[in-house]
View 1: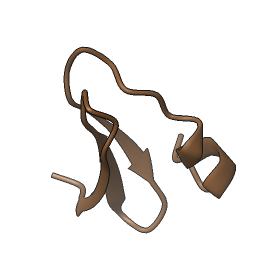
View 2: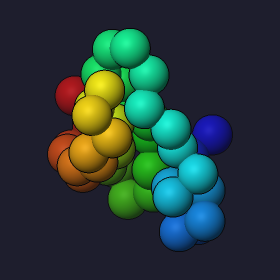
View 3: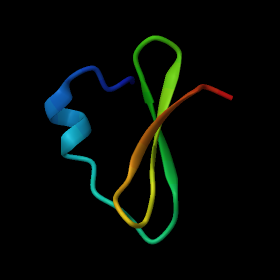
View 4: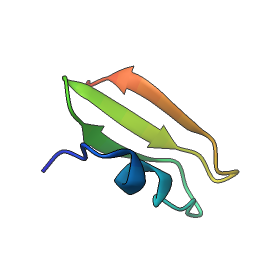
Length: 43
């Protein structure tokens, strides 16, 4: 299930390792351990 709202994206918290979450439009959101967020095309 893809994340589609700004509130859901803002609610993502950093973890010990980099992780990716699918978002709408064929993109994924990477969340870094430092808390940074970046959008990338799905692999």
